[in-house]
Length: 226
Image 1 (tube, rainbow, N blue to C red):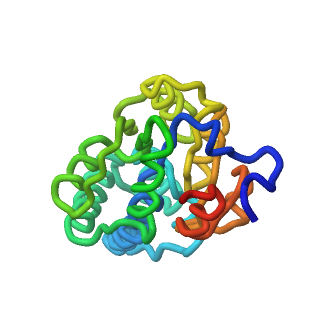
Image 2 (cartoon, rainbow, N blue to C red):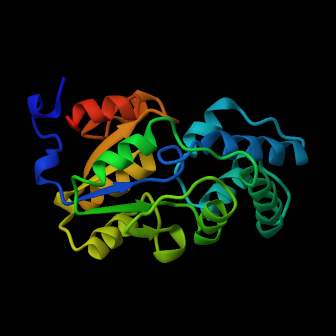
């Protein structure tokens, strides 16, 4: 089924910008985060239950460590927890991050059909820069908005509003591609159109999106990209 057969869904012909989330959309990084989280739990003798991973997709670094501390009732300073967690995470990212299957092909095609393409992520600027510098990940986005660039990151709308401002487009003219409930909430609140991809979250948790797809191949078909 194509988007032009659906009511109230993004129309590529009217879009001025595509805004990509990073983790789980551009790169297959959710498993990287999960491995680091598991190792962090092992440091403190904690076994991480499966729901904890998905429930905390797409949130800011600071909020993640706050929730980790509260969830497992650890008697540790949050600064110490965060320092150990970041060390584990950066070690994992240095050797094991790859593009999400189909992203590069989709990006190459969409680049020719919209005015602006931006990256909007809850990942801190330093880590994004490190990934681009020390991996095979290298994409020519017009703008990159990270959690370091806004006062309130996802699920607040600030980062998507900032990206739309940088692109010079009304949020209604921007299509956001997300993979997490907090990211979708941010995009929806900002007034953007949304498509969710099930790379790291279940369909049921992504119902806030205008439409949900399982792959970039399906996304190409829905947008009738040629």
